[in-house]
Image (cartoon, rainbow, N blue to C red; front, side, top):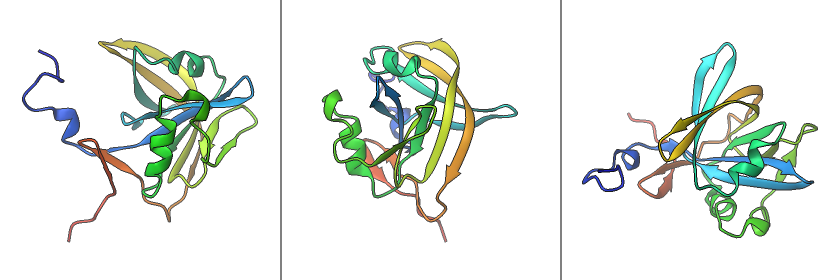
Length: 161
């Protein structure tokens, strides 16, 4: 049995932040969407993780980048998610505003949180790779809410009374 075959799919039950991971590769933005970002894995040194499908055709291009931008997208950026996650790799950034750092990390304008990271470690994790990233810079827009994914739908955090 796999989680995909299970009668209950736990990975769909809990909301997770939606993030774009991107970098300049040969002068053009290359990126992918992940809903597996874990922040605060380590505070010293500052580390976060993402899980990447082994079958990803995008990850090999990003893995060689000196710096990666990780953007936790804003609650109104679901259209950007769909664009960056599309199979049309050449058109993933069409109509999506982005900024590149001097080191080549690409972040999505209007995101709730921007991280500039470098690849620290990669571990085998079944049909995924567990990617540990070292965080070099953090920028947060406290006026923006993060986009969350749950059970193949987008939403945002709502405080309880």
